[in-house]
Length: 272
Image (cartoon, rainbow, N blue to C red; front, top):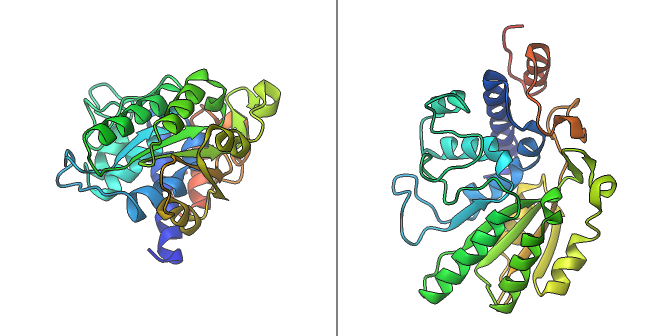
């Protein structure tokens, strides 16, 4: 995709995310909006997937370790054709296959159940180990949040991934510096993610997390004998001026006035 198409796709996905959350009046806008370009780089430019054959044995696997950002993942899966876009408007409703956190038993295209922070990246490490054991050539990608880096499981997974030389594993960080209770530094400082992952033995890259081309380039960089870490500098609530860098939008759905204003910023007119 060229730059203009990427920007239009990101705008569309952000509008779908906000509509989902407004209709169910529940969920997490901040971290969903911040990772849109990361998912674009993965699902449109990098990963080997087939929506017509979602259980393809040699498909690449993706684990949304920060599972609360699932509206972004659902929007991408629908856009890629894994299920109808109309399903998005049933998010978190009774009987919907779109749960408040990803559920592989219900949603086509989801490779792993996630919710408890830290567990997803640990499972992804196990998936990558399994691929090595089976001599399979698929790759495994995990997206974590910076608040999630406060979980010990993240570092146990990093230690194992480096020890077993899992060069088929890529860990991406949605580094927006905020979590549900405030800034990372106020809650529990995470220091330098780059320095930490380098010390654990990862090949590390740092990119603008809202630049699809930069993320794609890092994803495609050849690495041998090491797992890969990509620190994506992002803004929580990206795309909506009154949500940007505001931790209060971590887990709060917009009311009607806020929804109308946000959609207007994204170029979508809705009834006020």
